[in-house]
Amino acid sequence: TSLGANIKNIRKSELERFLIPLPHLEEQRRIAAILDKADSIRRKREQALALADDYEFAVFHELFGSDEGKVQTIEDMLANGVLSLHKDGNHGSNYPKTSEFGKTGVPFLTAKTISRSQEIDEASVQYLDQRKADQLTIGRLQPYDVLLAHNATVGPVCVYDGRYDEAIIGTSLTAFRPNLEKISPKFLAAAIRHPSFQRQLKSSMS
Image (cartoon, rainbow, N blue to C red; front, side):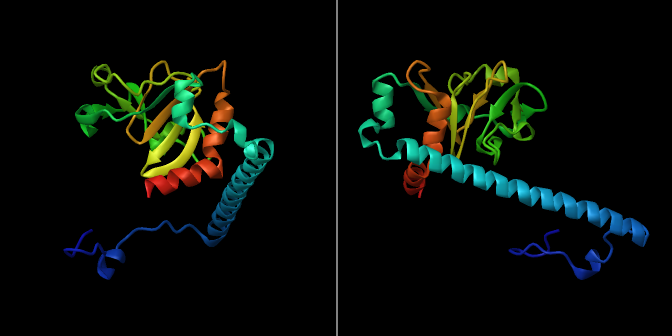
């Protein structure tokens, strides 16, 4: 409830009327124990993901980081055919309106679609009306496209696994389309995820 021009707050008298379930004490303790276990699992999962990231960065750096002779720009990779596409989903004035999304239709992926574990988060995928999707000529995904979030959420990366028959990206994602005869999608994703690339990205974005 907004009760002021600039500060959102709730009056104490209103808060006192809020409902909270109150089972008997033993049931409270049982529920609290379950929630404690769930929270412990969540924390351990976050720690495991962080360790996996550190391990991937260390291995990548050990295998490749010092080989300066093989470093190329994105522009170079496009010119020599290592990449066939480097495109974001900036649909300009044709960008979908909120009213054009629904529970079914063509999947429309944005930065929030890439999960902490570097995968497509199905729960965050929006769906675009087919008629509107047919009007969008760019940002259409193909399997093995490497997706980079570069707007709002900056840095998350994943390899698109082609799970949808048709899918489109929004302006907050860039798709890198690898030439599978010249570069591995997983290697490209690891290179973009590596701290050296991420530092360049965040420096540029700031």
